[in-house]
Image (cartoon, rainbow, N blue to C red; front, side, top):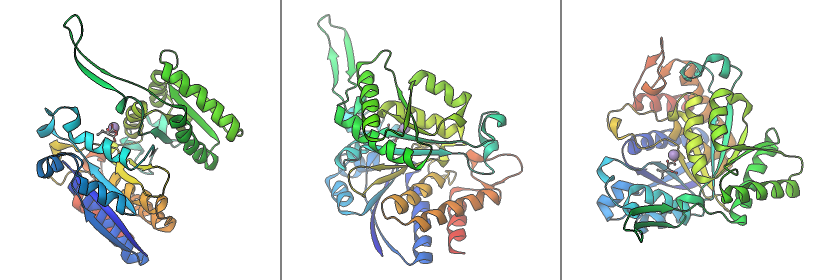
Length: 360
Ligand code: IPM
Ligand code: MN
């Protein structure tokens, strides 16, 4: 089969880690007899420099004409002083919105032989941790009304609005339910319903939707502040977590670190079709860009999720996961997951080894 993939390298370490994912895709293609046609397009800071906008028309067109999209990371100090809509991050938010990708799935698992890199005491993680965060991705405060200026008393102010509609909550709840049905039939729904009206709607709609459509699923509500604490206190009690855009953004960084490193966590963003956007959850790490120090694994795993979730290539997905586990078992580590007695390697060596394990 032939698959068209648009790759949005982005900024900072983006190009290096995408190069890693493309190298691994080529290895998968060779082994399983697929052709992956790759088209690189600019997004974020690079797009601002080249095209004057963080999401150029040609980039969006290419994404919408592809079978799926892989993204590195966007942003960096060079563009930090631009105003909101002109920033690299605006390009990422816009592509998610334009592609209609309202659900973001971020699975944080503890890899075998990587438990020692978790900052938590081993007794908290040794039984295994697997937290799947289902984050609403095209609503809430990241997309709500923004204002800035001076109020009647002449005081400078800025505001952002958290707003959710019933439909937005139901459609992401549906995805969480479908996932929970394949797992433990349990969802922890995270909100701040003791303070926010939008959270009270979130909570009510989630319960109504689940009891009507998936009565066998058990929903537990948890406040965001308590959840942030519980994830470090008892990460093993979490399975599927359903939450809003901003809370999911924050909790997924925390969950990633608990399971070892943010450099290991991939995500898939999907809407009504099989065309998705796959990316690592980490940022562009400008401090190590171009130094061959980045961990390419999150992006490689994101490419793996694409094969499974957009193209239904389950054996190919499993081959990528197994190849990653093998390099870890063989003791290879990038700097972020380095621990005593292991072999420290750079980005290129890491993805080269993973590709090699697939082709073997
Ligand atoms: C993420 C990132 C983005 C987000 C930024 C770069 C817009 O933090 O994917 O988690 O907030 O969604
Ligand atoms: Mn984030």
